[in-house]
Length: 508
Image 1 (cartoon, rainbow, N blue to C red):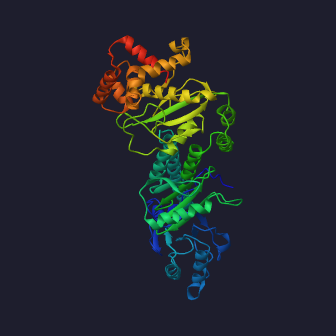
Image 2: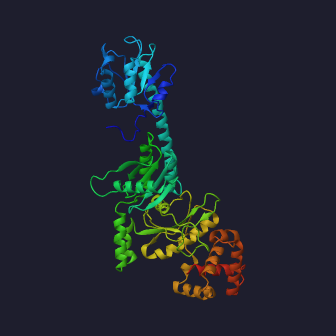
């Protein structure tokens, strides 16, 4: 069996062979179709070459098999019809030493059956023709291998981008010169790239994806179809997703390129840990039935302690940060207009080593077992909590939100919550909370002011960095801080006041 990872040897256009000046070949009958190709050259002097042809050949003959009285009967019609029936692509007739010219009856038969007839001059040997065919095939094969290699590299680079799934689809669409789409396990189109085809073509591609969608033993992993002059292909991913491709032509190597994209998309959309889906379902059932975090957490990962990671994507166009969601306290005043990218969130979770992802809201939130050490991710800004047991996850969520706000303000790829002993550790928790409630009471009905004050203090009173962290104008920050000072009846330039407020804010 041929290696499916290697593209098939590309055929050679007959026109390219005719263009070789060293061969001096000349087509004298049959259609002159620029798209006509030959797959190899074969020499035979059999009167009936049908049993020895595979299809696609340039059959070379010197006419040794032709009887003297062939021109007056049906010999040439029978001969040419058998070549056509066997799938021969063209017939090359060598002039000399047997025949001085190409028989007229053979020319007429080739015209009648639509078989290209090529005259091979006396100075050109059949071996030279065969060698030229193989040289052209080798050149085409080298060009196709180079194309496949470049496509593999570009697809791998796309998979490493912050938006890997859309990037892979865009790159694949460019490489095949068409349109690509990713369909979810339920059949819905999730993402697409390239020039969108007409509605009937899209509908046909959607129908083709159902052919390869896993439905039991014997389901094919790929399928092809052609409609309205467009070539369609569908590839199933082991994760239940299906890749669809619509291209104006099917070039050699396209299947290999699409297969590479299929592997990458499988990795990007797949579960990072075996059995994690079932474990999450079990954890959800136990929580709904009244289970505690301590009881449920062992089902969700390795180890007894966890990180909470908050993440927002960086806008590569202007260097600013785009929030995809904040379910914690540090949230922007105006959410980003683009919806969260579920596929990008899944890819980020896979890179960090967790499938426990919440992409709903303004910041992507990830629960990460402490056996997985969070690392900076290209294109993302991360805030990481301290490692905590399951019952302290709510407090860790606040830590991650604060760390992310600081990371965004300082344009740092990853900021961790500090675990050093704090002043609050020296004071009983109940007394600290009571003091915080009393001190911050005037701000209780103004959560935006509390968030602004917390961020402003954490950034040492920097107006610009606070504005960046909260996605608001610096004048808005000034107005809010002035409002805080008025409600609290205090002077915020006093370091003692700032210290006391910071202590109170950390007790919330």
